[in-house]
Image 1 (cartoon, rainbow, N blue to C red):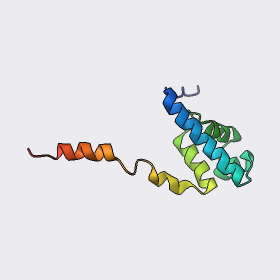
Image 2 (image 1 turned 45 degrees about the vertical axis):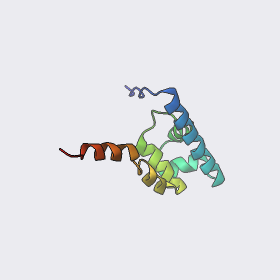
Image 3 (image 1 turned 45 degrees about the horizontal axis):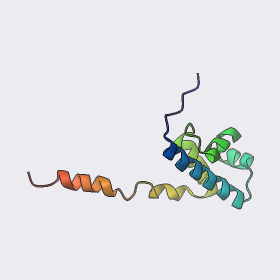
Length: 97
């Protein structure tokens, strides 16, 4: 039985949809078909469509494989790299006893 996709809020869906659109534009700029990306990523063409649609049911690994095919896998290093809120919380916890 297929897994049920996670519950996603409208703002999060907009973020995923925008991300998917950027994936599609990157693919088109490189003049790659969805079939070519799928083959190079070792995934199905329907998985490429899910990524480009911002489907929350697509796995993080699938997104990463498509990024790698597009030569954009280094962008993942920027995700959550500057955790200002987390550092502030940590600093508050390290205050005087």
